[in-house]
Image 1: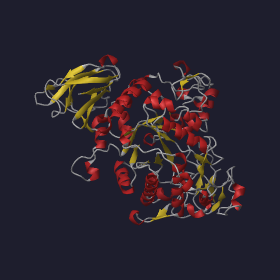
Image 2: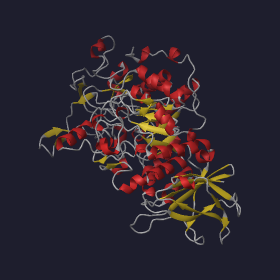
Image 3: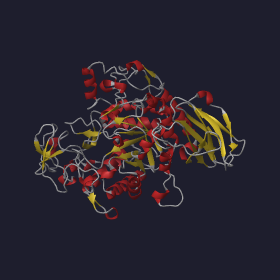
Image 4: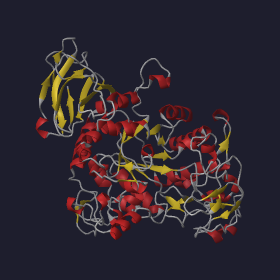
Amino acid sequence: MVERSLKELDFDALTAREFYPSPSAWEDQVLYFLMLDRFSDGRERDFRDNDGGWVTHGTTPRFEPSDAENAMETSDSRKRWREAGAGWVGGTLRGLQSKIGYMKRLGVTAVWISPVFKQVAFQETYHGYGIQNFLDIDPHFGTRRDLKDLVRTAHEHGIRVILDIILNHAGNIFQYNPDRHWTKDPETGRWYVDPRWDGGRYAVKGFNDRHGNPDVPFMEVGLPGAEAFWPDDAVWPLEFQNPEFYTRKGRIHSWDWDPEFYQGDFFDLKDIHLGTGEIDRYVPSPALKALCLVYRFWIAYADLDGFRVDTVKHMDPGAVRFFTSAIHEFTQSIGKENFYLIGEITGGRRHAFRVQEETGLDAALGIADIPDKLEFLVKGYRNPSDYFTLFRNSLLVQKESHVWFRNRVVTVLDDHDQVRKGNQKARFCAGDPAWRKLLQAVLGLNTTTLGIPCIYYGTEQGFDGAGGNDRYIREAMFGGEFGPFRSRGRHGFDESAPAYRALADILEIRRRKIVLRRGRQYLRQISGDGLQFGFPVRTGEDRMRSVVAWSRIFNDREMVVALNTDADEPRSAWIIVDGGLHSEGDFLKCIYSTDRKQVGQTVVVRKTVTGAAAFFFVVPPAGFVILED
């Protein structure tokens, strides 16, 4: 049964059980982010099940290199592949449940899932951000029970579940009756009235029915009167049919104009009125209080471990603080002491830090500076110091001593929309063949530097989607009509893939070595001759081809990690280490290298002419290495 009103929720019954505990430290975790519609439909074969057994009974075979571009043979087949990516492709909760073992063996400890809630029936909002019923699962994904079963299976394998949620807006649930802003369509020449934000409210024709027609009265008619609209018309639960739940001020036109970006709609996604006032005197609206009940329900029902909160930039800070307080209090009351709230906070690092500190969010999603500097440091187009200084933010916290943001930021490489790249989206491996060679190095950088690392699905398989639309970086892992590498009918769950194997090895070392999870972090100076040392920098317009090395230090233990941005040639360097921890003649041992012949080798620490401690090492082409004392 799906409740039609918030009044029907029985929290006493929902919370009368033991819940899966929170981790003691989220910086110990490794996240894996997937778009549910694009991950698995459960029909694959030639992969390993959750217990490691070989599956042969599915219908979709595993991708082989010869399958690349098999959907591009004719203009019609290319069009068919492109158009398939614009709508639902078939991933389900049960499909995801069948791949928990794939993530476990990779080293993932928490899976972040795109929104699963019921979407408006008349649009293909496969991404999950067009909610029509906040208390139900979209039938494309499965059922409520499927979500509960998925979480149970994940917990049995030691994997926590973070759900993507939305507070800022509902789906395209009603239509305006605009009376201003006549606009000429540049393509058709047709004049229309554009309901764009100007600070005033717009009249509303009605809630949309299941066909997208505004034929449902724009009012809360109450039960049983509203039952005629159940389940696909208007919006649910019943309380969300109150017109005062919505700002009704039209779509955002200027995305950085305050208060427009707080009050306007995300395109046709309707903005929810969350409250009023400054952060310390914020008055939450009935809509915000209703949303708190909604998401408390999902935590209790499915035993969730965290939320990723969408579009925090577009929410009043007071609303975010109210929500985080309500959720943290609830989760602590049921034994989840460290339920994690990750905010998507665009608008720059300083803004993100301020919002996080003011609102009580546990971490910010690093979607601006971090993925850019992660990607282009390894490709040789950014100075390494640009990335490493992101985590040492004494100026931001207004303290003289350094503060390390090890558990306050989630570090991502590829992601599902790549706002930073504008209209030309591209995964790390897209384009130059050199980038695929460097994939293991960038995955190593992401998972052995500060922050909570997050892998975007398919990156561990070298997916190389690119194009002028989000769909091209949202390939279907399970194949289908919109498979990876411009293929059709081939899945990508290959545990023998080089990047998958390398990442699994690196994450196993990270799991065993607390230094790599919680240690302080220092970009290290290097030298070619052992005499002149400095930080690696890019000069001119050419790519930087160099060793980049850093240390993690924790409780008087140091580990040194290095990569080579040169995809084709080995690079050698003298690398500085902590002189207080290492003396002349000490040894460091290589415990990981992309060149397996180096594993087990030892190097000797020497004193430089300036008295610093350093060692010499050769990093293989596109290589990644880890050494410990």
